[in-house]
Length: 416
Image (cartoon, rainbow, N blue to C red):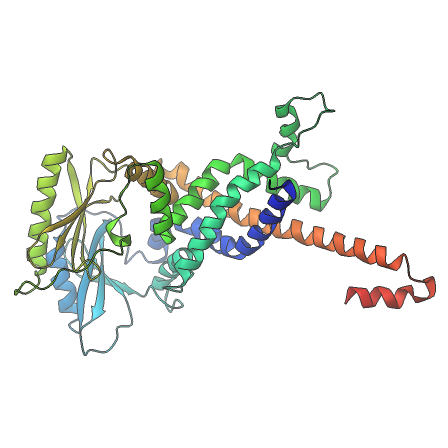
């Protein structure tokens, strides 16, 4: 049977391993809770907000971007930001590499609003929030960074349970107090007359308990984002769940069928048709179009809308996927109301991205990011103080057997 000492050891070293990473994701997450607001403040020319007019369709905007940057081709068109369309581009074969990844066009008249690079250190203010996002999602190290944060998220999830276990009062046959009365001090912070160590310890323990459910939600949803195959295996064990198309390794691009891949206009028409069919079949209402993506991984397209099955304040994830040649339906994502695991996952993601309950919840998520930073910092401080105390204890025990005349020299030798 594993002893309490083992769980203390696991909590200590898991916390030390995670601390630096959680500080980064905590601070960046606090900023990302206000992604649109900060982007509008930094770059109002790129994120202008709503204005009257009819939004151009995705195919028209894709062609407009390619006319502005003829050496590039469009990969993605995202219409979710008010007044601004974000278009992902890549250099054409044989052309020089681009110094940006996304171009923003006005959603009404299609004129260019700005460009942003989402990789590397920010060079202009337009790159600042994309860099914050990259740090938060994959430490700005595409490929390895998401794996690192995925392992950290998994550790964090396990440590949530270990941490709450360690706050429980140890069994005793001598106390007349009940369980809850003995557990109560773990929920409190004693400010008056306490040492710095005691205050840090109380902050670490109490905030971990007060916010335990939300910490677990953010930890487990991070596993979904960065270590999806683990999330899928666990979720499928308890709920009805299908791994999202973007995370599936078994999806292979279809072989060419003897015809050219679809144009943007053909893809848009196909997406509209397939989505209308699915909406009728599943009894959902399409509220607005959000995106059209040309996915090399799928060898096809994703057409995304916000529908009556989406739960967030904005955005949406109702999608159809279809191949690039025949328009054959490859998959459908309905965020809620069908598969229990998908519904739970949608709630986890929307809670993580502060896309529910309006401004009060955004403020809460921003504060939670600071709390995560604080929990990591206090955990390191607690470890350092205990380590220093243990070292002094060992040094004192060793010096007890050293003659008084040799103790100063022996003391400094032991501290080296």
